[in-house]
Image (cartoon, rainbow, N blue to C red; front, side, top):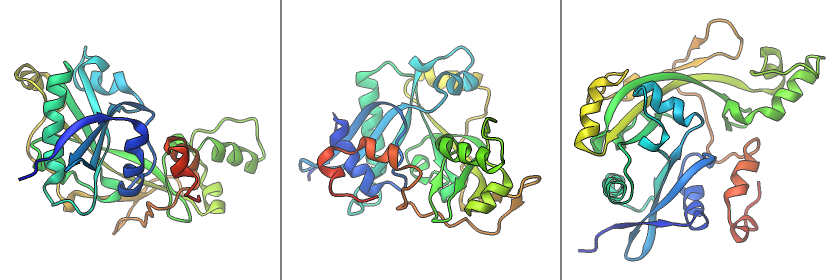
Length: 268
């Protein structure tokens, strides 16, 4: 029986598969490794390792005194649709082994994006530990594009001009401007997961600032709030409509990762 195997690959090889198969085409900036999963020499999955936007603060908040040298965070993980259901768990298992053989990291850390309806079942199946959730904000464009607040620099400049005060620096779009643009500000849960890569790391979990357990969240734990109007956010009855195929505000990020030959074939 042919077995999957994993090896480090180039960004140019990794990103076309991510672009075509991941629900979000926007890439994290602090990516250190691109790991490819192969079956019969065919690339069937990609997992990226690096850090989020606040690398040191993220781990130090969970484990005071630790820094970026102690962990990697999963940036992107996806597989071809044709792969069997448990394939992502196998890819994670291969990633654990790769980390133990090629790094001295203590933890593999990740978030499950509850805003798009993911409580983290793939991490639960791979025996990650759950560490609670945070509420986070995104914007949803009139075309369904998911827009991270860090991607709104140009929109904030436009918002300041709309307000009649172009010199004022804004950090969040104003309700009147969002109404004008057809943009919604949505709050949702992000679920925190960790995998200790050694016995020593597992012992450190007891000293963490959060409680790690297997009391996993399910679909019933997903929630969304609309904060567009300002003031108290309104709890929504269902998930907002987000279209992962739309790339407008995020076009610069997406196009910067695609190899030139692939980029020529795409129209944004």
